[in-house]
Length: 344
Image 1 (cartoon, rainbow, N blue to C red):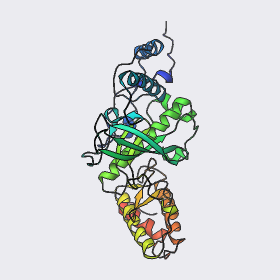
Image 2: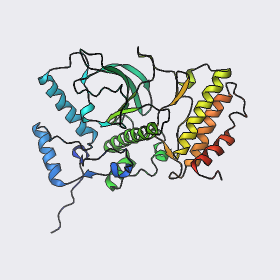
Image 3: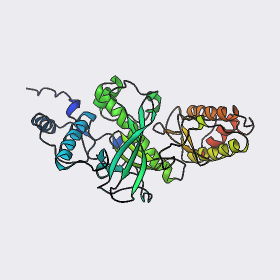
Image 4: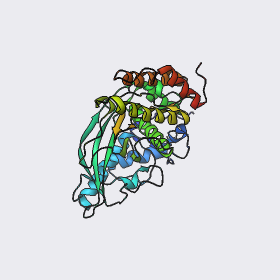
């Protein structure tokens, strides 16, 4: 007699432990370690129903399981004592960390406390909050940008179909969940975006590009280097500036150098505009990089490069930069040459 087919229960799915997606690890492999073993599912259900704490492990979990564990952690914190200053204890210990060696300003102390200071930016897929991480009683503190990807309240990420090309998971049940935009599928998409952006920032920062240093990733939250003042005033987006004359030309040349370096790594931003560039101390900083496009691997790579170039050159020429200085065709050709690709 054949055994009945076991139905997948997304609310109790547990994934295997994964190494950091930095150091060249393939993103598909990083996201493809989900384990549907029946005995594990049974034990997870029993723990959930009884309120028992699950064994400590660093595997990637579904958002529902992560939420359940966070509630258990909060109960433990209430018993062990609340932070003296912040809203939560530092999540450094359980998170994935950025490229090493990390900058001196990163606070890695496990006794550090995180304090929410408000919202910096809202978007279709994520919100960015200002966070202070400090060690009480010392002068060790840092302001961070906490980018938190949404999942359950969004049924489809902005243009995610073209950006996720080549990132499909190997397990058909996960692909079906993503294609159907189920609650589990949306959680997977949110975590894919967080993983992708964290990996992209790590690679680009290590290559010397002007991007925020990725401090850590914990689930769908990424803590990033904050660009702004020590009082918490964020650096303006390019679209919010009033550049003209020599200052406009200087910023353009710095940004062009960044785009050349990006193309040399084989990528284009994928959603480049004056809204996704910060101006910090007179120089541009590229932000919002979850959709970073591999020019060779993505079938739409060259067309998306052309769109990126057109968007940003139109902004500069619209503010007075000579058209011959920021000619979109010439810039596109130069970037494709840098990437080792033909413009045809």
